[in-house]
Length: 103
Image (cartoon, rainbow, N blue to C red; front, side, top):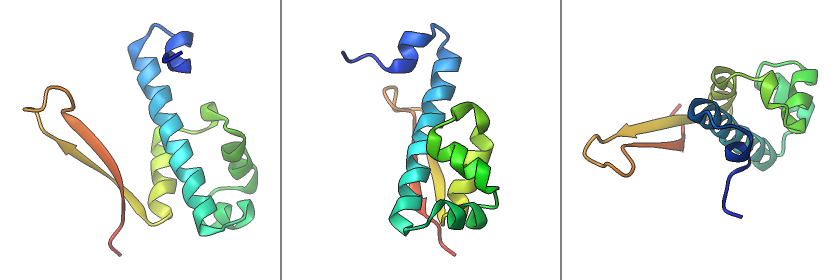
């Protein structure tokens, strides 16, 4: 089955894309926290959120977080989201990459 879970749950392309983006941000954030060896308590402190909110993150509660909040937390891990737009590339006009922030 090649169909994404969100594609099966909604016919709305906006809802699908928003949930898909949140999922990608969640996975990146959790992986970065694990790579840094942070406990949930340490991660909560460093990312400026409460311990219960951090628990929600690790439980995968997408509805508890906005895309803005997830991006803020990613930046606090020392990374940035870099977006490159090339209108001449019809197949992939917008490419986003997570990059180590220059401090």
